Amino acid sequence: MKGLVHKMQPDVLSVHNLRKTFGVGSAAFHALKGVSLNIAERETLAIVGASGSGKSTLLHMLGGLDTPDSGEVIYRGENFGKLKQTERNRIRNKDFGFVFQSFFLEANSTVQENVEMPLMIAKVKNRRKRVLEALDRLGLADRIDDRVAGLSGGQKQRVAIARAMINKPAVIFADEPTGSLDSKNGALVSDLLFELNEQDDAALVIVTHSHELASRCSREIAISDGILNQPAQLAAQKAAQ
Image (tube, rainbow, N blue to C red; front, top):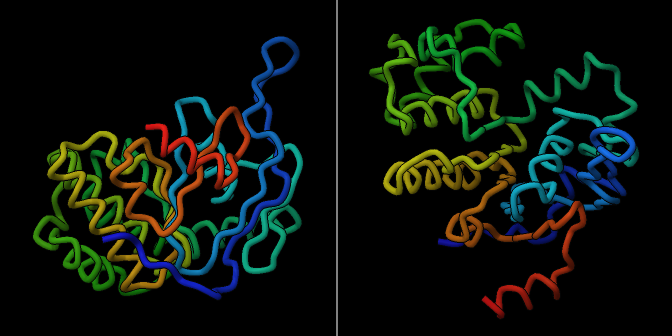
């Protein structure tokens, strides 16, 4: 089922004229070239594009994982670039959740130790109860004391989702969340992400090569050579496929 369209919702996140260049001189790579974008509360948004198009760079800017050379990132009316580092860190930990293709889990730590990390940073007490509740939703409550190294790829990604949702974030960013999974586990992870959007009211921003995953979102945008394609261009591209 296609992701819900939440009309007339205020923007949870917006970026204005973002520019980002890696390298200098003849080796310079212009990853973003003046990108502007608004994301509504509870929206589901897919960012698609070829490798090297700038989509992961854009997601990192949206999530505050990297800073633009110029332009603004606005989260619920606050200019990210003007906040103190401690406040930016607090927002990333509490209000944003991240799911990556490579999981970014501590393999030799337990499932609980991985999932509770955002709670530890936020100095939350009674963490095991919260972790158990999250894992139960994802069918992994019985693996709470297992080491991550012994889990399958699909289980690792569900642990990553549990970690992303543990602080009940306003936005979940997923960068190729099904890219390293087989079709069965990929479908399961996709379903879980959209359930979080619908049940927890979290906006969902997905970078993906998967047309099937992108089609489930309420909105899809394409980026090419660091520039967002206009809706008319994207529609024409789809019609030509």
